Length: 400
Image (tube, rainbow, N blue to C red; front, side, top):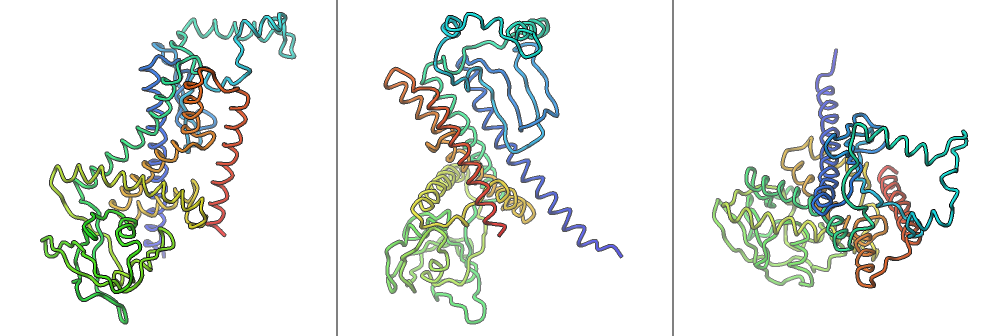
């Protein structure tokens, strides 16, 4: 007899994974689209806009602009190929290179055919049907223009995440934690009532668990704190006596937080807000997420947070798939978290990321001279190897 429940679970899991891949692909696409529209607006020459990596599943060259648009096999990335962006040679012009090697035109490809003549022939054939993309090469543009293009990707990631948050708050409600009844031998401060929705701690609106920790950090057992709750649809402020010292080890020390606040557990709940409050809190919530990303990165560098607390692409897909299978609210929360995470992470000054390239452009802008491009290339290559290695490592730690 066929186990229909088992089949349903499998289909739900597959659907969750597909949704996870779709949201990641959407985030990558919107990121590259940010680079694209900024580049077009500032007169950069763009050769290709691609969703995914690897062999092309679909591609089409615009007869108007000459730009190539493609969808590729591996859906975990993408790129906007600016002309000359990765042309990190010795910084010499084509004329200087030709003067150094006057026989370049006669170099062959091993089959006796001049490579330059082959390239010229190929270009002529393409120009018969498609125009050459217009604009200036990436590295020939002013540093401030390159900086705008580089940060445009992260900006689009953030705006998409903010849009998701606004939609979540408007149609589902703001996620807030709700007090539940303690189980046997559990503990619950008498000031609470089951069903209380916690909205603020010590006068500070709480969005994430880290907000609770920030509001209580350094306080001692026995101190009295004010907790703003929504009880039976009405806002009230109650006084709670701390049950433990608030010396949190790291941002994941939720057990000590609950003990200090005299709570057994918290469950996610949603609260509908007015129009302007929805907009205001949506922006605040998105910034809180960004702050948490930076905080986790800082605690990771200082050793307060272990590698098991982070994850690579596989972990991201797994968590997103689980959230998608759980509820729409969980999925939208994870989607907004991924969007802000990508925005913040890409602007960090880590080699190979947009933030590092912004730093190089800023240095060039200040000193009126580019950094040796060979050195910059090596730095970015080391960064790529490090990032891929780190992503693989943290995913492996999750598996074993």
